Image 1 (cartoon, one colour):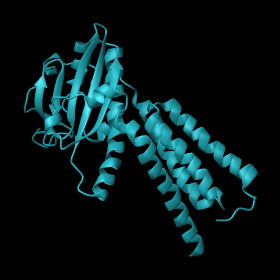
Image 2 (spheres, one colour; image 1 turned 60 degrees about the vertical axis):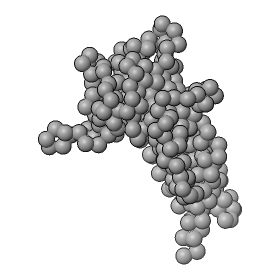
Image 3 (cartoon, one colour; image 1 turned 30 degrees about the vertical axis):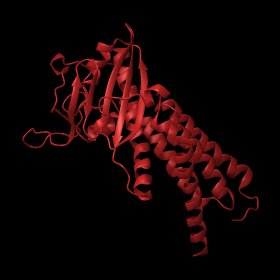
Image 4 (cartoon, helix red, strand yellow; image 1 turned 180 degrees about the horizontal axis):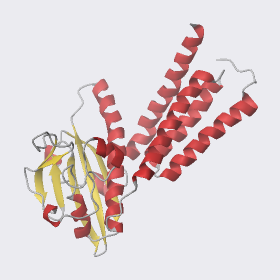
Length: 287
């Protein structure tokens, strides 16, 4: 029982430090990834639909506005998916195509942008409804937010997405929304990078192999950190997982979701375990 309490205390401390650190140090990065001060403060057409503006994110895309728009309006399970992690999208029936369907370049108010596969009758029921459209430049999705493609010059554009949220009524809801913002950021950031990659490369999307390697690296390193809490002794039960999960969060939330960073993360995990087993295991430390 005493050993169990030590492990439980270690888990609470390690994960408490990580949650506090991410909310205090990373949250501002997450809710305004890529956006300038002006873009965060500027009014957007969809603001009137938001109880709370939860995030404004932006990215430069080195293609003309019309090219970026043609990919942006391909959002949806009935079109080109969401340009995010293809293996996760496929679980929801979001089919990805490398071809631009000219007939699907138009958006209309009231159209549903589905997030799941159709039912047995071919009907899409879950998704985001288009509330406003300015063809070739912007649209607003109910329950998500505003999407804008601004022209920088004839060869480049700026994609800006402003996410909406409900107003929290208490501290628990505020914490829950903050955690949701972080999870939504992972998918939305990957989507924006996916649109950029598609537009700049003419439809050559990220490969699913790259997604698999990155996601598996994140999962494996995270589970290994938890394993360390259970198996390492003394202060190292706190110190090494804290170091590991700090690096893990930087890779997960700050760096781009590329397989190279995932592989490096796994190497770091292995190095920490090697250092412990070789140099630290037999040293006396108590917790």
